Amino acid sequence: MAYTWTFKTGGKPSVPSVKRCHRGPMIDVEVRLSQSFKTMAHLERERVKLLTALVDTHLWAVRTREMVLRVLDSELGPLFERLQLQKPELRVLICEKKNTMIIEGEVDWMDRAFVDGALRMNNYDVTPQQVTLLTTALDSNSPVQRVAARCAVVLLAAFIELDKGT
Image (cartoon, rainbow, N blue to C red; front, top):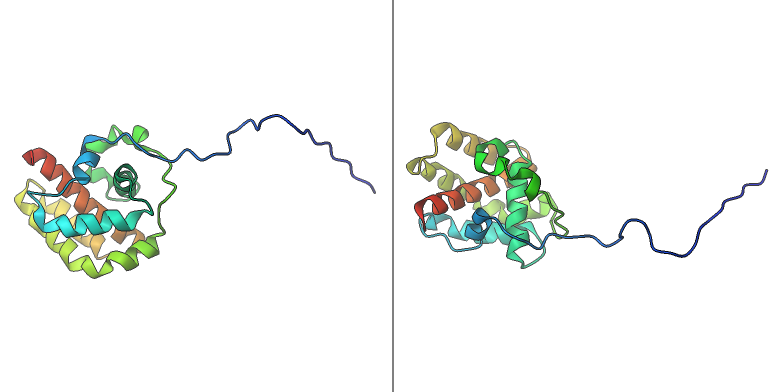
């Protein structure tokens, strides 16, 4: 039994083969995430370490967007009503994202600081239920949920910074 295939050669492919990786623009909370915390200064070290651990690039637009997307794609996404309307626009391809287990290994030693940061948010119009949700997620057995919870703590701190005008 014989088989015959016909191939067309030449011309350009119908779909571009080059990835279109995110490079910006940034939304207001992402811009705030890329700057040092003043009001929430106790989370500054955690902000820097987590943003560095999330992706393999130095570009702030990519680092901050990956943080936002990790939160929105988790069970903690509904905490951020302000971002829900922008969710379709925020969806981009992050080419440099790291595996969750690698991120976990880089930041797990800071867990106590993330829990303390979440608990201190009671002073900034964050409800006790939201704080409980964050601390429960930080204590989860799932590394995906723990990374998302760390991102949520820092993202919430950035919103507090925005609201305080710092």
